[in-house]
Image (cartoon, rainbow, N blue to C red):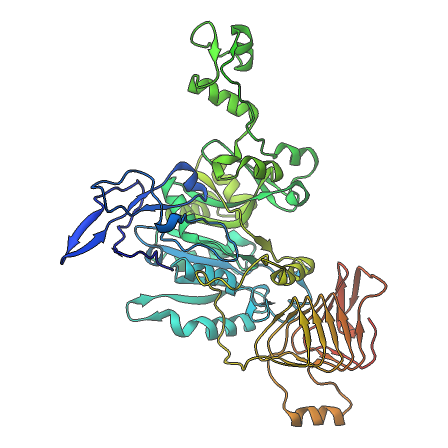
Length: 576
């Protein structure tokens, strides 16, 4: 994690629970050391900022301070996120276990999941989806990570072992990234039935870890998040469960589980993918009742408050009785600004959706899965609503940055091409304070010979010859021949290079080498790894076909996007 820099030596005192204030200056060996004052406000518990006051002039902290040069730490995921020092005690490295759920069979992402697990799907030229949650964990000082999966896990296992196995453990370092595949046992002969069931089946293993919290993550989301702030909010509110929440507009709200919260950010109601009147009922209303110094007659006041007897003959709303204001607050609806949204943003995004990311206190998890809901299969639709109805403290933590659920071909396509957006991409891989890690492949730089490349991202080890590439993502080891045109396309590249001898042998057999052939035109497509596209091929979907399953021909069309299957052969002259 990036450190906060200053001209003086800084020694942070770990903070958990309450604000800590101490003398600002301490003399050590005739050197001046600053001791920070760290304070948290209510909004900070829901994704606000942590402010550190470095003050050399006074003996006591004076409440809320700021970082040097006016810097304020923000949780929003932008192209260059601010570095921060979140103080957890005990720290996340020793007290938090990360559990990444690999998801189901990935049928909506088929054919990309035909030969691989969903978290192993390539992303952004050089990466795989699993690199996102693992990197977020590592950047948040969480180094104990399990990945649960049960479908096509061979490539996922291989990637994780090559990317993270060699540098996670060591002397005095118990870090690891391990895959736990679904398995049958005498106690449970079934495969994973859902998110909660997957965790329950390995609860005996998770229980052995001496941690305070379990961090439950999804393996198919694209976002950048500081989990230490998430965990800090969980501890500050003394929650049993904390749910990462995303502000949502009405157009997309029906695809998510929605929540309602009270004035403390506590979740009071769930609705799984609601529609119609049920959707409207989940709308979070912005508190807009503001009456300036007006007095209301007793009968009107009593009617508003449903029988509450106000103190005195009249009621002054501005700065008036707290109980009266609370009732008005309930009538108006929950004020979403308590989660850190400003009024304008709250109007644009009137719903709060669950991101499928949770922090569970260890005891709460063991109690819920073993005692209270031993037959529940899913966290989002069964366990967490059940915990809420039992009266357990279930809190919402607002995340208002870029986040995408890579659940469909269209979402996957848009997320990948979003990294080419100007001037700031939807998601940036160029963040020094929170990098995305992956497998080191030691490939040479990409080579472009007389190529016209615009608004594109090029992966490692590519050979691109005298072609035109626009608004595309070109994966590692891609080979693109002369005269080719690539537009609005994701090329995943190849797992290996073919030698000149291999290519001569293929030519003698009348076959096609890996890569894009001469004078081929590809538009609005996804070309999976190791695909062989012949010369003069046109993949442009000129008839605007929206859905087609042509697996024997080597491709599918979903949402108008042509997806060429991994290892497929598209013969010379083919038109799709």
